[in-house]
Image (tube, rainbow, N blue to C red; front, side, top):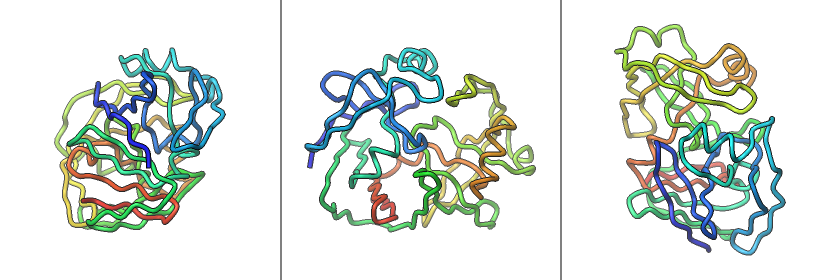
Length: 222
């Protein structure tokens, strides 16, 4: 097992690896950045960009100097425990045992999908640790209390603005009032292709120690 310092900055989570800060992003199918990576004895060759997005552009978008993104292609090879309370993240090639509520995962292109309930309706959602807010691709979104506009970004799309709403979401036995926006049309079409109704962002990581065990297709909320 190897442990790294976890940094929460600008509503994003970063991993400090050898003095470089990498964005933790289960929602990115492929990692990219300024250099190759070594985690728990495993070496990874890292592309310099993803869909044209470079580390310098990413730093501008998130407002924080970052070396790149550690995406699902790397994260899904480990058992990962994300502990925001102690500012620590652990990677292990061996199975990690974590006591807590066990939730099932499926995947689309490596991106994890988890079920939530909104207004007593079950909805599959991407579980995206790189997303500062959540997204709900449903006409009922505008019926929830408005929280104002926010600027976000996605690779291949760039920056965009979205109106956000406070949506009560149940994940397992826990409920959250999440800030949810709506995605640009192209990204909304991608959600439909994947059979999901939205994106659950990283806000849930701030309420639990989270075991992300993609190889076993589970998430544990401790």
